[in-house]
Each structure stands twice: as C-alpha cells, then as structure tokens.
Length: 446
Length: 94
Picture (tube, rainbow over the protein chains, first blue to last red):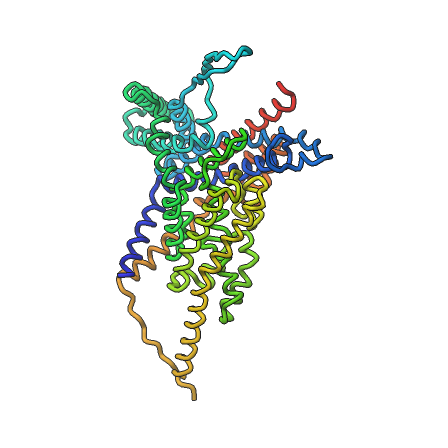
C-alpha cells in the first residue's frame, strides 16, 4: 500500500518534471536567476547603504557617509535594467527552450514570441495629475510600454504569450502550408529567411487579432484577464498560509522520496512569489506597508533556511541529544554548508531520504517554522520581508537584510530554527533507541 | 571460527522496481548541452563586467569562446544595453 502510494507520487512528480512547458519555464527561470539576484542585490545596496531618504536603516544616513548617495544612480540603473525587464527575458528564454523541444532553433523564434507578447500589451497609459491649483488633469501617453508589463507583474502573461506564440509558430511551420520554395540559385540563408517569413507574420497577426477580439468581447485586455482569473487566484492560494504550507509540505515529501522537491515544484510558485515580493518592494519604496507576508524571500528565510526541512534544527538536536557516532560525524560535516543553506550531506548522508523516522520531522519542521515566521510578522513583532536576498545568505543575516535592517526578523528566524530543533528532538531519541536495538540484535546473532 | 552470515536475497516487488527506476529518471544528470548553469566562473565574471564596464561585458557575451547559450546572449545583451543607456542618462541627466 505504502509502495503503491510512493509510486503514484513519483509518477506525478515525473510528469511535472518532464512536462515540456514546466521544463521550459524552469530552465528559463534558472537562466534568469543571475538577473533576479543582481536586481535584488542592487535594490538592497541602494536602499540599505546608499539611500539618504529611506525610512529604514542606511549607511548613507550616518554622519560622514552622505557622499555615498553619489553612487546611487549606478545601482538604481542596474536594478532598473534587471528587475524591470524580467518578463521580456522570460518570453525570450521560454520560446527558445520550448523551440528546442520541437527541434526548432531558428533565431527568429524568440523575436516572434516577443512580438506576440508586445502585441498583447497595451501601449497607452492614461491617468490624472494634479496641477498647481489642485485640479485633476487627465493625460494619455501613447506608444509606450508600461512597466507593469515588463517587470514581475508581467511574468504570467510572459509565460502565456511565449508558449502560445511558440506553439503557433511551430504548428504553422510544421504544416508546411506557408513555405516558399526558392530557386536553388538563392543562397541558403536567404532561402531560410524567406521560409520563416510567412509563418512569423501569420503567428504575430493571429495573436494580435486574438488580443483585439478578446478585448472587444470581454471589455478588458488579455493581460487583465490573466491577472484576474489566473494570477490573482494562484497568488491568493500561495500567499495565504494554508496553500503555502501545503505547497512546501509537497516539496519536503518529494525530498523524502529522493527528489529535489523545490526544483520540481519551482515553476508552480516562483512567478507568484516574485510578484508578491515585487509588490512589497513597491509599497516599501513609497513608504507604505508591505502587503504580502508570504513571498519569494520568506521561502528562503523560513521554509528552506539551513536547507529544505530546516535541517539546521536536526543538526542542533543531533549534536545535543544523539548517541550515534555516525549521526554526529555527519552533523559536524554539515554545519559549514548548512550556514549557506545547503544540506545535501544531511539529506543523503544520514540519510533523511526514505528514512521513516526522520522523514516525519523533516516534513513537519518547515510547517512549524513558516507558521512561526508568519505569526510573528502578522502580529507586528518583525517587519515584512521586502527585499530579495540570495537564498545562500547565512541564517540571521538574511532576515536582517530582507527587512531592511530589522533585528527582530533575525530573532524570529532564530526562534523558528530552535523550534525545528525541538520538533526533531524526539525523533533523534527514537533513532538512538533504534541504534541500540540494532546493536543488541547483532550481538545476539553473533 | 566466525560464522558466515548469508543474507537472504529480497525479491523487489513490481512497485519497488518502478520506484527505483522512476527516481533514477527524475534525478538523472541532464546532458551537458541541456544543462543550464547560470553561475559558471566565466558567466559570473561577465555579469560583473556588464555593470562595471559594459562594452567588455558585451564582448564576453558574444565572443566565440563564450559559454552563454543563444537565449542567454539575447537576454544579457538587452540588459547590458538598457543598463548602459540608463546610467548614461542618470549621469548626464539627459
């Protein structure tokens, strides 16, 4: 019965991992990671080191360091070039990854996907601005691409537009109906360019027409529809505590079965969590309260701190309570990588994988830790995480940076790690007992 | 004389064999050509140069020994150009 269930779960995980769309999205996000980290790093430096106007702590606000503000444009420009164009990068990368799956490596494919994406964006911005007398004056700016289409807010639409554009292009090319036969005297590269001409035109026009008809029928754009009907519900599930806890329980379940759970389920939650973090950053920049407690940074600070399963707590429990020399040796080896949130030595060394005794606390600890982090943030003990901090940032330092300098966030993380140590403690004692029984059995056999 | 302990061989069930095979497939190493490694030494140095000295960063992205894949080349070129334009705009307040 247990084997049947395990086999079933692994089949689903394999289907998720080998699904061409999930695979393309996962590879695209992996390639985008340096951009996300660079943008996050620059936002952090800009706000926590170089800014004299931030409401949080900043080195530039210390007397004698005001000159640091001169360097702010460099990091602001880097932040702008990275985080505000993430969606464009995603469109290009997904189209290439998906094209590879179909054996289509034409250089025009990402351009077609990008054209499809922009064809679905609104290029007009309207609003009101107050004049000197306080009267609202309406304005309309045409032929611009608003930021909400190119930054994290546009990630979902980027995924849809890229996939739809690529699939359409591939189907049209494979049908061969729009091929142009060129005479043999025409150079190969010119013939190739003409071969992709009509499929490219057809793809872009079909997508643009779809966007136009959609807006005519429903009264709002395709972008607004995705934001309302897909992005918002998914975000509500994932940024709500029950949905978040369930998702990260699934990742630990996959880990227990020997699979990199965060990688397999990453495509499911990454976009929503990045959008939530982006909203927090926008709010904090305007001096408002960050709205989303559960976001991309919260995952690394409370759900995967010291590694999946909060194995830092297990290391503490083993060093204090364990009588097994093998466990103690692996725990000591795991301290250094654990400080950078890497725990493969624990998961595969102890092992935790397929170990029924340690699997239970491995799955419970992140739930306990995330609940502690969420509750302490909710009651106002610590600030909401608003800055993207690399997942390898050591414990206690990470929350401090992620909240723009709130020491209480580090205390909250410490409490979460200690709580996970308490969760692991009884199971470490059980494993002591297990080792004693095995030793006795061996003695009797001898 | 010590007794030799012969362990009985355990026959794996159909589900257990399927579990082992599925796990091997899921955890298989991707082919080098398919693997996306965004933090290789070459790429990390290139990212730094994109922001420190953009023309050299662009050279590293596009030179024939570059380890960037085609998609990465496009995206990082876009980032480099936007950064360069923004920083020039900010410095010279155009």
